[in-house]
Length: 137
Length: 137
DNA sequence: GTCATTGCAAACGCTTTGCATCTGT
DNA sequence: ACAGATGCAAAGCGTTTGCAATGAC
Image (cartoon, rainbow over all chains, first blue to last red; front, side, top):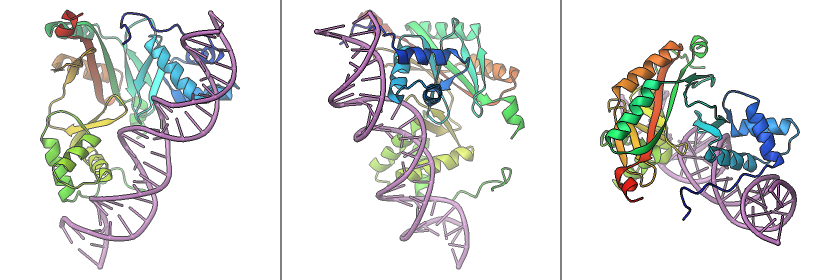
């Protein structure tokens, strides 16, 4: 059984991972694994789909990439920004707004503490219909 | 092409749908389609899996059932009337506490509104180390 | 009688995995 | 050289769909 405190194996600096990171850096928003794979292919970077998935997994575990679940069960990824924040995502077009909520952070910490839980983090996502999609419906 | 404003076809009161509603009523929390299907089978109610999915879809569209996306891309369903809550999960033993946070609900609604988003729902999970796991470490 | 609903099985889309090969370090 | 990384193809999973049969109204 792996020691929870020991760091994971070091990530190797391969052409594929570099290409993936570059692609992730190229956009602010969330991209699905399939989108990223397609983009890499279009750029002539030959990368297997499985590799994209495995690399993204590794990056998420390493804390370098953020992930959320899109509508159809797809996962979307993006580089972690420095600051802890949440997202308000349009469930139709995917347009995303970054949210920070000190109040919620405090609330979460307090609730956890009240129940005796320690070392707590949380995930919070808002899903709705953005003004544009709402208008065009 | 169906008129978006005209009401959907009337839902027929079939044995299968009745059984499904009964099963949904039997619990407060969210259940996945697969869980519901298994539960019905165990009760001797013969219902096809596709029927469960189609009925749930219809019920969601009819506004009688709420749905959220679980972790593995599965969808979970519950009757609309039951109460909305979140979970505080121990990342080691999985022990879970149900959390309700009116303040957070209000906060989420307001934030979404401020950005012009409508028809908003959210997902919120807290992860930490429960008292027991923390002691045994 | 009509038309929504059902069941089955096949199809789907996204993701994961087994395994042989390759490549950073 | 060794351990991690890769590619391919096949498997896995939850979900959806085509079609003929059934049942509610």
